[in-house]
Image (cartoon, rainbow over all chains, first blue to last red; front, side, top):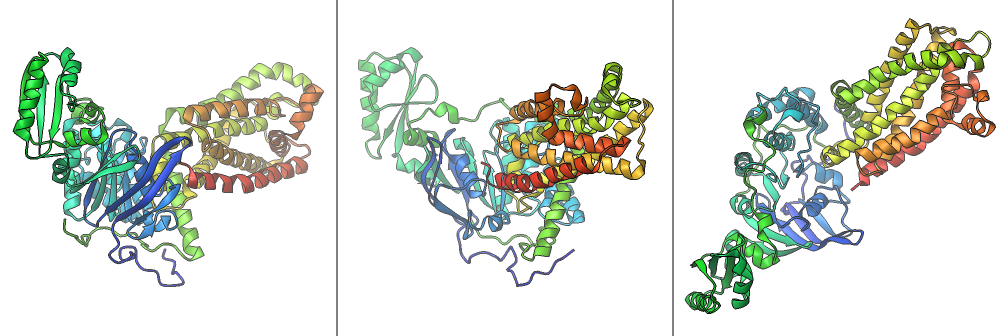
Length: 345
Length: 280
């Protein structure tokens, strides 16, 4: 049934403010009681771009995504999706976006196929179109065999793929992936990455939040680092690496117990990823001098060292330097997934 | 990155425009509601807990109450009234009230599991998730009442007021159950999590069910309790269903039930939908 509307409306696909960026966030703040979740976020994403929003747990990533997908009203500031305000034009915004959340939001009692058909119908596809599209997506996301099993029986990776497929019944112009691989095993993670790359290749604009540096480095054109509710750095992975200096002196101690002493000997050292690691950021130019200074200081303090060397900074170093945090929380967990692909197949 | 147009074969909504005319809005509201209703009806069939609540539990209540209390309860009933005849219409109301706690639990689970987040980020009707859930409850209510009648007939229950009376009794209880579903949806949108919803539902429903004319005539209660129970909408619903089933004053309790239900629905539906739209 088609009900004619009284005045002409621009079709959804063309119904955007010309040349409006995919996302513009202007000084958005959000508090929950006494907790400041977002303290003045500014951010822009161009159409066709992949922005990685990188930050530790509790940095405000999910809160920002929830504001952008119209689930949460900002206290102050504004956010626009393709020129449409997320508060005053929320229903227009919902026609342009897809959301795949941190927790796979699929209906566990329905089968994969029923889930996709339901979401298709709720995206206002016709029944037949929703059914056809569900079949396509099951095929594409390697869920065809499991399509008629309840989603409750799916492994973590399968659920996440179904969740992602559920955002794609109508191809969104802007897709939000909120920690799409958190808790997945490495294989499932790389499957999600492959799908994500395909979507990007087809022109989908992507805003991806992650606490994994590697994921941001792998997928994103540009990375925004968020900590304590605001953006503390922005740029490509290389930009960010350059920003903290040309090189890093990487130190591996023989004995973890000597790390406090080593820190006293080299006061400008940051704690590294393992319990024996230290690192010193070196501004471009005097890398060798820094290396010898560090070596001498460690020798004078009689600290036994397994390895000392110069290297280019990784995003890990960037993250450490920027947040001053513990990077161990930001490394992808190995094999801590909620089940492998075959586990329940 | 290049800016690529969307591939031509991508599906488009059958009506890609935002519904602007009232007719289009109503159409999409109805279709979204039906889609959610189908989903929730599937849940009833697939979730053992819900299946038990919809089948075994009401049957158990009918059989157990009839046989356990039938002996002593008959003493308090008017001459010639069998307890099963008195009890069954009341049990319709009791089971509707108990089932509504499952409405709250189901909605709270949807909230916890992020399904509601997905619904709310989609361009679908903002009332459909609640309207679909309560409509599915209504369908289930009707099915459960029919089941209870069938079991009741096996152990001696008989309608004495004709087919219209029986249908009237079923409709009064269904309306009451529909109100309870909306009330518990509203409640679930205010408590943190499914367990809290279950507990809150139980704490509210249990005393309400017993402090009413569902199981025994009010005259058998102490004055203070009878006074309270006489005002309860559960008493009105049970009295109306009972009178329409086996005879007695039907008009007054039926009108009171309808007044309670329509009045509260007019308040709770807008409140629940507004809460759904703004919940964080």
